Image 1: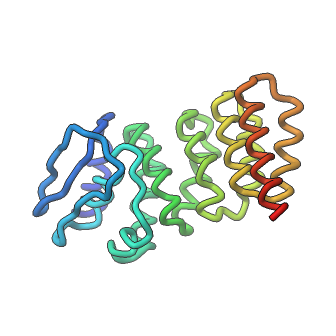
Image 2: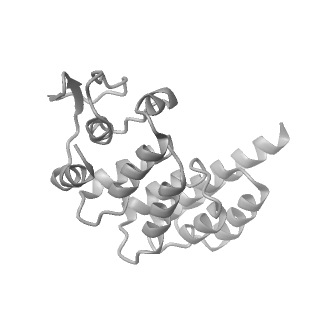
Length: 205
């Protein structure tokens, strides 16, 4: 199954809260949501496996599972294709962003940058982006999070505060401090307080 088929799979996806299990190359739908590892047969290809991971609710594969797929660069490229595809289901794209934290790579960096500069990017994708930019080692993570911390959507600002806390630098601390003074939403301020506490704790060790 090639990239064109993978794009079609992404386009057909709808909001399923389920676990996909690949058995002998066939996709079997289970009605339950689980955080347990997804069983993938030895004959399943990279597209089928990624589709299963993205379809499973909040599933994050281990580094070993990612390496088992083969080329990390290829996995990165496939996820990036979904992230930037405007025709793909929004939840499916958000899952691809979440999974990118386990992969990283330049293809992921380019895709996240493209999502960030797109004026039509939905708040859901911005929230996911804010939570992964430090994990994927995006070089410009700090200015990206600073931009998201000033977003018009308060839920995006909340996620940006969390992302800044994960970044963990004193530069991030000062951004949070500045944005908190200007913030009007109490739940965003609470996220800022938690993030600053996390950074303080890290630097006191």
